[in-house]
Image 1 (cartoon, helix red, strand yellow):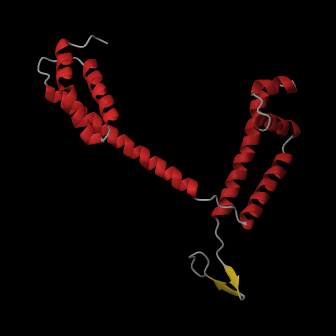
Image 2 (image 1 turned 45 degrees about the horizontal axis):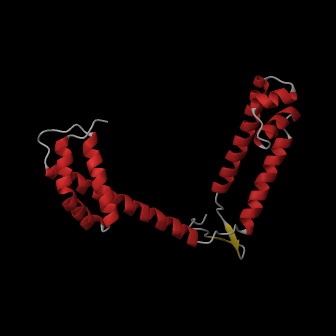
Length: 192
């Protein structure tokens, strides 16, 4: 950083009182106005000064910083309001059907993992449940890192397939419901 030119320093000191007053009219706080006036000086200090710089530049820069401050405060308030609104809403407990569906999905995953070869299953569980690295698993089981990687790829393929099946089941809406032994409309679906 270079030393502030004497012209800028004199201009700032001469205009400081008016600058703070003008910023305070925008932001509504003396302490914030003082800070923004200082920020104005620092911002102009860091740029290369020109002989044509006037007090108007000082006031325009201060005005822009004050408006930026107001915008950031508005964003902060919106974010806090959204957070408070989200916190006010009680978490919804899953329905018995959702719980049963989740239990069935996890049971299917467990069954599929049990169908893996024992070493592949062990490698997967050591990595995903116990948090072991591939190097640590290779040393612990006396196998190469390449073998650990291949076993993990096999297990992850199985998990991806399980996830794909689960998503497909969730997206497949019931096309019919039975009400007094007659087809009926469910969730806006047309009758068959």
